[in-house]
Structure formats: C-alpha cells, structure tokens
Length: 476
Ligand SMILES: [Mn+2]
Image (cartoon, rainbow, N blue to C red; front, top):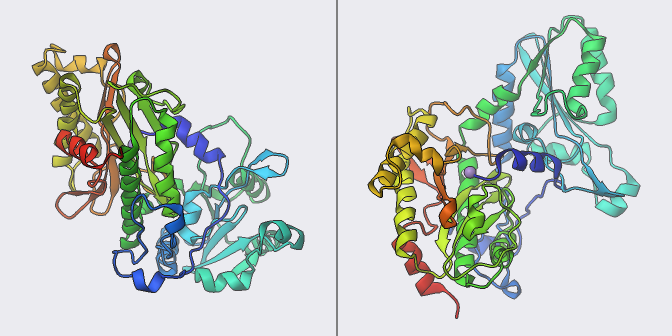
C-alpha cells in the first residue's frame, strides 16, 4: 500500500537526475530475443563481477510518445494554448539537488525528463502544433554534468519537429497571443496542497497569463491526461512486466538470504541489489516490517531485528522507465508458518483471490475491494474472531487497491469501471495488533480482454509456494 500521502510528497520532492537513455550495449544482439521486451536478462542473484549489462534498450519508442501528443492535441478546443511542465530540481544542500522526478504528464507526452523543460501545444484553425522548450546548453554546467542536449540532437532522438530553447518561450507566447483570437489556456496543474506551499512553475505561468490576457479561459488538463494514461499501450505494459519481473527477482533474493536475527534493512539490501543490477529504480520507499512493525501501515524505518517467530511484511516495487510495480507479501521469517500465522494468512489470501476472480473489464474497481472485505469478514467469523461482518473494521485499516502506472498511486477514480489494458493493484490487508501480526498481500494486475493477468504472479504467494521456495533456495 505504499504510504499513500507521504509517498506522494516524498516523490514530489525527491527529484531524479535526468532521463537515462539506454544505447544498445555489448552483448545486446546475442541476448536479444530471449525476452518479450528484447532486453538482456541477468540471472537473479548475479554477482557484480559477472554483470554484462542492464536491459540495454529503451522500452518506449518515440512513436509511442508521438501518438500520445496526437491524442492530447485532439482533446484541445480550437484557438487554445497548452503548457505542460516537466518540473524543477529541488536543492538538497548547497549545490546538490535531490534526484530529479519529472511530472509524469510531461514525461508521458515527450519521453523527456530534464528539469525546467516545457511542452507547449497550440491549436489554431483546427490544426494542432507543438513545441518542446529545453534549457540552453551551458559550458560551465557541462563541465560538471556532462553534455547537455541541443535542440538539433533532440529532434532526432525524440522525433519532435519543433524544439527550441527556453529563453525563446516568452517571445513565442507573445506572438501567439498577438493573434488576438486565442480563447483557452490548458495547463497541467497537479497539486495536492491547495493554497498551501509555494507556487510551482505551472501555477506562476497561469498567474502571469491571467494577468496579461484576462479573457483566456483556463482549464486544468491534469485529469484529461490522467485519463489518457489509464489505458496502457503494449510498450507500457512491457515496462510494467519488467518492473514486476525485477521485483520478483528482488523478493526471491531476499528469501534466499532471510534469516532470524537479521535487521530488516540488511534483508532489504538484497532487494535493492537486484533492482540496481537490472537497471531499475524503486517505485517507492520499501517497507520491510517484521513482527508488530507490520501493524504500522507506513513503517519504513526497516531497522528492527527479525525474530525467529515473526512474520515480515514487504511492500515494495521496482520501476522501469518510471512504470511501477507495487507488490506486498508477508512471509514467516523462519521459513515455516506457525499454525496461527497460517490461519490468519489464509484469510487475507482468500480475500485477494476473491478480488482477483471478479477483476475484469466492466467491473467497478471499488466493488472489488468490497468483495475482498466481505470474504475476509466471512473467514474471520468462521474463526470466531468477529461476530458481525462490520466488526472487520477492527483489523481492516485501508482501502485495497489503486491504479498504477508512471506513479505507484496513479491517476484514476476509485469507482472507475475497469477496461482492458488498465493496470491496477489489489492489496487486502488485516492487522492483528494484539498478536503482533500484520498481513498484506498485493499483486499488480493487468486487465485483459475477459479477466486479469497477475503481473506479479511469479512471487511466492500461497503457503505451499512460500515454504517450498524458502526450503529449497535458502542459502546455508
Ligand atoms: Mn499499493
């Protein structure tokens, strides 16, 4: 469940440096074709000395981004200007910035992720045209940060015809507005803090435009773009698949090394190793919560010692080109469930399975979690732990599922109707504080033509799978 609000803020603040381009590297040709995404797959648990390469391909093509810009342009009314901002770097200390995170709507339209860039589109006489504005290369900065993209080099790389430097943007806007017939301004405004907090670039832009051209009607395009993002293309689905696969490698690597007496963070390191090895980032801050820590929904200190009789709850995910996996599993540290742990674990697993069974196109998403909840309540009543279904509230503390995409908690209405090619998660959980047991089981799912595909299916989930995996693979 990834730390709802906090995670959002963290991700907004922690910005990531730049867009990593993956040129085909050595070994690319031989290994290509083994995998649906044509990349190089390292053995799980590969040791640093053996590393050949990352998945050396960019998974999303420039044609994909072009199709997104066309789809977006089609949404705009005639005589409109639109601006979508990539975002600013945030300084951490002195001359050091937090890793840069682009606003995802910008990324979705351009495939570009450098601070300050602006994607501008305009529609006049029924025709949509667009321009990408980027920072002008600066020799001094290049000395420290490496070569900066020029407008010419990017045209080829991104497949965009019109790319200009940011210092030309005011002039462009003035000229366009001088036509006198522009009516609408569309801006991607993504804010959860309402009136609090400083204005970001997009908000400052809107304020300036309103002052200069008070006749403009301002629209927030955030939700329209969100809607475009909710159904995934083949390429996006492959990126999700890779993120889920690498998450699987990470979880299995932890299971191979999990032992009572270890600290949670030491175990977490085995997950991180697989992500780095495969060129993935974290979709969000890992939760590794042993014993009673699992009852703190947002626990991410990950510094406690794991006891022999504890269960440990993981909520984690890799991200490939920003496409996220979000998976939760709860495992017995010893490798074997106690009878009581098994009993409670089965309740949550049945809840998840009931949700999976009705996940298909046409289904309202929030009703899936109601079904999970209903089944878990039934099971708890069988165990005599509650007398009436509504008493499940004692153990059931959070919603159980969300859309996922370029953000872990992606845009999309909770009561949305599922459609083919949407990706979302189900994550029922129950928290038994008196017993020091918190259980959450979460899968990342792709809605298919007539059901759903569990993208995280390779990660041990049933009691039998879990115990067998640990028994057969744990390092001595
Ligand atoms: Mn989640």
